[in-house]
Length: 325
Image 1 (tube, one colour):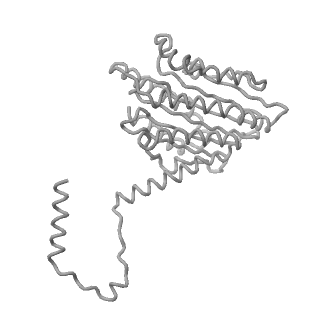
Image 2 (cartoon, helix red, strand yellow):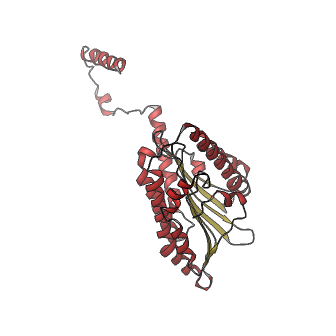
Image 3 (cartoon, helix red, strand yellow):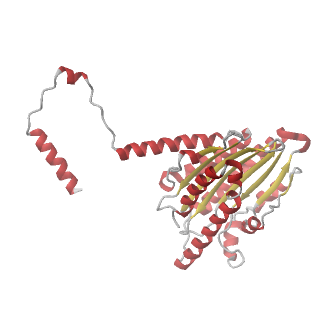
């Protein structure tokens, strides 16, 4: 700071002790063009790309209006409550924030904001995925997840809506635990019993169109909480209108309440975590992230978008996942 001030002072001294050159009429008529520093240009370009990518992500173009409204509100809640002090802008390349296959039959958007160094948020990740089926029809998946780092042991947040037809949907909504619930009964009490999260699952299960959803992946079934909402919704004769009504009247308020619980009881509340425990959390979180790539993305992205695009997207996700490892 002192050196910078000395340089500025010396420049002012030189400027004041030399006569100001007279400008010719020609030079007066040409306005001086201010050049931004290269670093400033890069920051502006990055911010513009982030804004453009976020706008594309928040369109949720293939989601039904009720699903779009829900996802926009959930993402806005996370970003507004955590704010720029806890969440950095999205730094993904533009061709990772939105990508598609050559024919345009598969399209996807990805939005990741890493937590700041002082935050206990690791990152939030939102996405939508659309692809056509060989036999006809299409699949639309919208998801939002938020991961915490090892400065806290509180659960993460996850919601995913998978729609294969206008009248059917799979909903996954959970606060996945980050500690063994048998070894740590106080963890079960604090985050799942005292918060009455199971009441939301029970409420949805009372709808006649709702049945339990059982994932074919034993791994996924092993990492969700006892209060996880994993349901299959078949609107039947009510069709698309009934399904959209279920999303608006039942899923939307439940998802908002679960996210509110996560924000109020997990993301914005500090917890004491010892050094040894942090090492265990780091190891466990790393395994979960790697398994997520392996199960959810490693096999599906090359098939839907081609190997080159898949490699580019997976590399960007791995960079985020390992940033604080």
